[in-house]
Image (cartoon, rainbow, N blue to C red; front, side, top):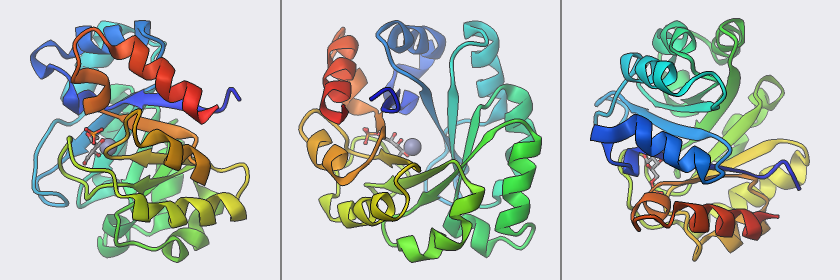
Length: 223
Ligand code: DX5
Ligand code: ZN
């Protein structure tokens, strides 16, 4: 199936050499770049924002698909900047969108589209699929987090798979992404549950010069 996608999480790369790391995984056959934006409020960590994404876009050109995972307390605040910086998908956290007073979920989805990006909505491990059900028609992708967001290198939570199964049963054509602890060891259970967009950080970047092998291995398991 050509709808299966692999998105390396650049957080696990050598950040002092971000553009070359991105070129390396693109050359190794990945489908998109997963860019983890953290604001130190929604999660207890800080990464980067639109200035870094803009520089990366300038360096590597228009072809790569930038999947921006927005672990931020005020998702509506960064939509325009990320769009202008070259983001292709803006994946906000449902928890942040529901608790921040500055926008409703439907307005946020419209804003993202008006800035030319696909809409993704992410669920922390403690958030149920019922919570996202009212908004499925407004989004292109649901991200089922398989770790608590904030840090790379954590263990995959297999107990999130019932959420993937339930979404896949209800929405056969929905893009369902999993993120956190995905590796050649954990991919099978996620693929079997119905996930079709696979994020992997440590698994792709941890072993030097193994990116192509890992990406091809992950893809083979999902297809
Ligand atoms: C965690 C991030 C993930 C993370 C994945 O908050 O959203 O994208 O970088 O890294 P691994 O694959 O190492 O769990
Ligand atoms: Zn992520």
